[in-house]
Image 1 (cartoon, one colour):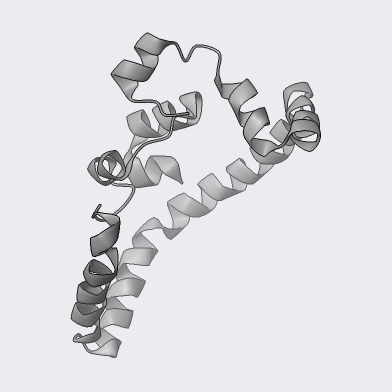
Image 2: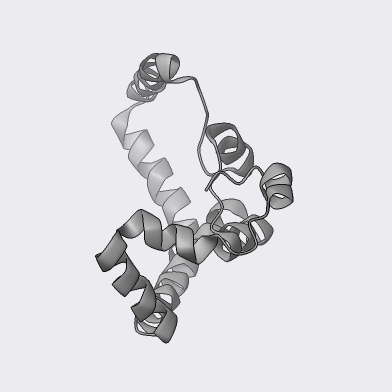
Length: 131
């Protein structure tokens, strides 16, 4: 799904590193439609929903069907493979160790232990990695 959403290069960065991104970077990558300050979020969402509500429902439905059909075949193949790999990963030695650490010390501790190697101060500064 990530590759369809943000492109191969950004998907690989996110999946290979586990780096977190802020709202502005997520918007620049195409992960989110728009990034706004928290205080403006409700108003921005209301403007968008009011705009969409002004379009006839039958036209919205047809446009949604057309756009979704463009991606359905590609996404279905990706999802099938991702499901298989998820099962393999969860049962690999690393996956079992991660689950054990998460059960023992909590999910955040397990993620930190998994993702900390290689996340040097220089890396954090350049890539704005916040984990």
